[in-house]
Amino acid sequence: MPMRAFLLMLLLAAPAWAVQPDEILPDPGLEARARALSQVLRCPVCQGENIDDSNAGVARDLRLLVRERLLAGDTNDEVLQYVTDRYGEYVLFKPEQKGANLILYWLGPAVLVAALGGVVLWLRRRREPAAPAALDPDEEARLKELLGK
Image (cartoon, rainbow, N blue to C red; front, side, top):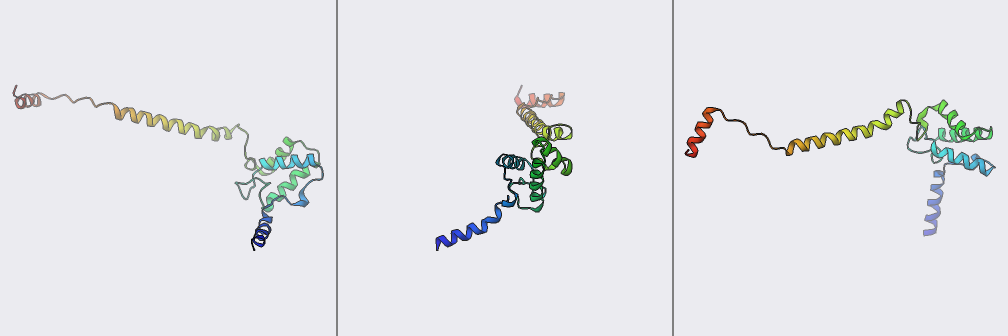
């Protein structure tokens, strides 16, 4: 019985293998380049997966597009540029650090530093003793009377 359960689980897991046999290129060098490029391209549908791992239809289309461009003789950078031109920088897991993306890259750390600075200032102010308030003449007279001076 355990062997049947294992085979059943193996059959159910088969759809999880995203790259289909009909997509694989006969040239191992080109296939390795295609797999490497597929790792850096985000699936527009799944968002958190690369196109190499995604079973979405658009991911399959992108995998085929990458292989098509490689067969046409494009370099890796040309393939990435072609896909980015068609789908936008969103499909790149690591967009270029320039322009508006630069703001997004540095905004998080800048907010963190500002928040830490605010916490440090708050803690410093909290530790400093408050300056005693000066007594007016009536209060001083009353204090002397109470202390017996």
